[in-house]
Length: 118
Image 1 (cartoon, rainbow, N blue to C red):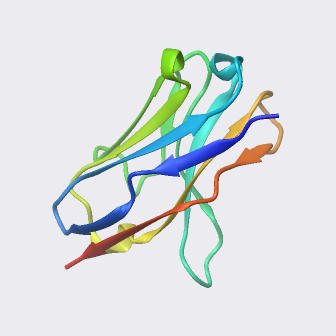
Image 2: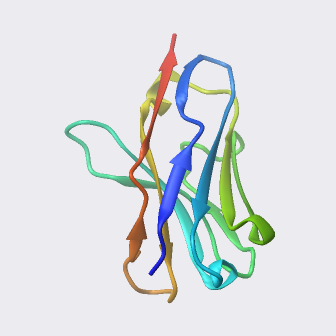
C-alpha cells in the first residue's frame, strides 16, 4: 500500500512558476512509476507528465518545455516544476503511482489546486 500526499499548489500569475511535491509512504518508492495528472470541472483527467522507475519521462504536448518531472528516491518524493504558467494550466493536480507498466495507476493522492491568473 502506498499513500501519496501532494503539496505546493496555490495561486500564480501567468508566466510564473510553482513546484508541486508528492510525498509517498513506504520503502519501495523507487520501484514505482509515477505520474502527474490534472483535471478541471467537466473534463476528463489528463496525464501531464510521468516518470518511470528507471527515469524515463513523458510530457503532454501542452506542457512540454514548461514543466519538468523529477524524483528523489531518498526522500520518497516526486516533483513537478511548472514554469511559464498559463491560465489554461488551472486545474486540480494529482500524483499517481503504479508498480507495473501497462496497468492502471493504483494509488492516487488527494489532489492540489493550481490556479493561474491572467
